[in-house]
Length: 387
Picture 1 (cartoon, rainbow, N blue to C red):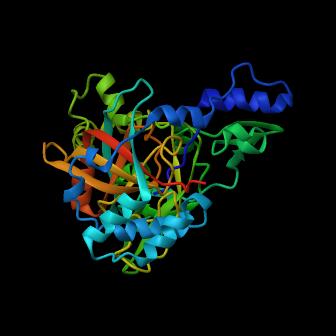
Picture 2 (picture 1 turned 60 degrees about the horizontal axis):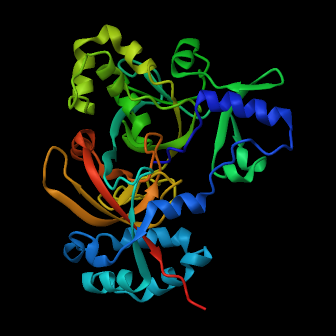
Picture 3 (picture 1 turned 135 degrees about the vertical axis):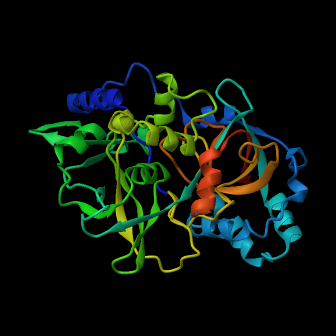
């Protein structure tokens, strides 16, 4: 699920003006140096400080970590530990634990104000039913990326903005914000870009939030995967928060399941609610070679249920192991285990913040839709050689 970061409408306008000015003057307010900010967020601790560390069966983690090494092993600071991992018995929990204790340093992650507690939510890979053609009950389209969507890498003009991108479109010789969800839906401008049509508008909407999913096509008896391709650059707004602010739902009642129930009771307000989120996600079709394999996350490797998480890459490096201390949805039953940061998300912002990947299908969706739990988080980074 590649749910890349984006810039707000205000930032888009301001940065477009700034880029157009072609000034060489240093901005009045310097961008905060990442190294300094990250040092303040990371507090080195010992492995004995990680609650439940000795009880985690890491054999289910090991394939996810090895997937990360396919990418991280190309980087100098990760090369040695990834090479060392080749000699570890991936079916021996004790050997895996010794590997991490010998090669990594754990860091407690704290928020910008020093808070240690953040939030864990969940996501999953849903299954929808659709058709290649608009017919019968298949009336809601899922679209590929339109040709008029521009993606501007700001690092080309200002290196300190590495990883930040503007999304917009051309209006004459000007770059302007891309259309909102409401504008896209009302204009019909994406006609001809349909990948499939599905039978449930809410399933289609929540697919955008999950970032990827599978679609079963009865006419050909095949299942395809729709993976995240891009986004319109507009900020993500929670429809659950919208309904809370309108007084339609009460605190603690804004799960995906409860939102669906509210929409079923108030179908006349469907478009109002969906359009409150101006963000719009575009997809690309992928074949499913191995049905047991999860979708690819932002790191470019398949996600592992219960061992992959989405993070804010401004604070947690993609591919790195993270130790989480949270609980199961609507429960005090602990989840204390090592996971791997392999994805990002439009709503995942801040240091102590994760989206827990539950896997594929309805049961995973039931857990993901309910999850909004307190979280403590530790980051594991490779020990660096001393000279």
